[in-house]
Image (tube, rainbow, N blue to C red; front, side):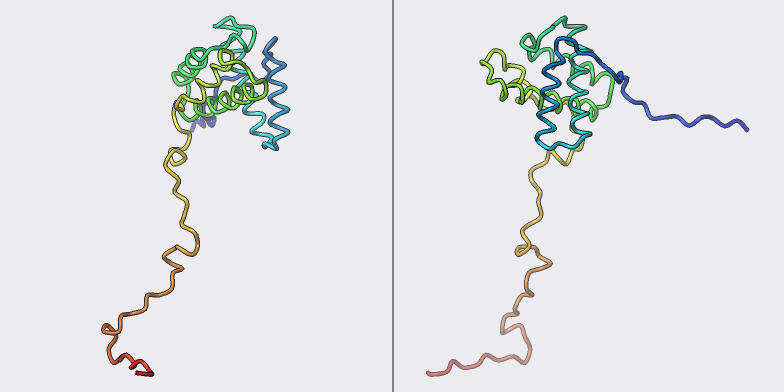
Length: 174
């Protein structure tokens, strides 16, 4: 009997140590910002890795851009299109959220003029490529407040005519 090795699920081919060169200092600042906000270590690592991958995998390589000021909305759209062709919509959505957070932070932090913050506006106004969890994109479906929940409402009081053997008392003082 031949035993086949257990197949690992396909993981994105994202190298572990990426060097974003001239784009790296702002990624480091973003990392400090996320940590200062109290984000979980995995969130910080995930967001900064996604931004670094975008910088190395697209901006420095394919687009030939060496500063964040050169990034345009179309760069993000092209990168997301590439991710959607190679990976699941859920994975691309995670990458998109990281980029959206980065460009939003960058616009807020540096109070950039309108032209330089165009990627932030484009990312913020663009619909995600595919929801990681479809229920997150539905209208708010919080349970009603405890006083309004049906299982905690007092039992309805039956109408006098519906209760057998029950008679209403005559009002006193008439």
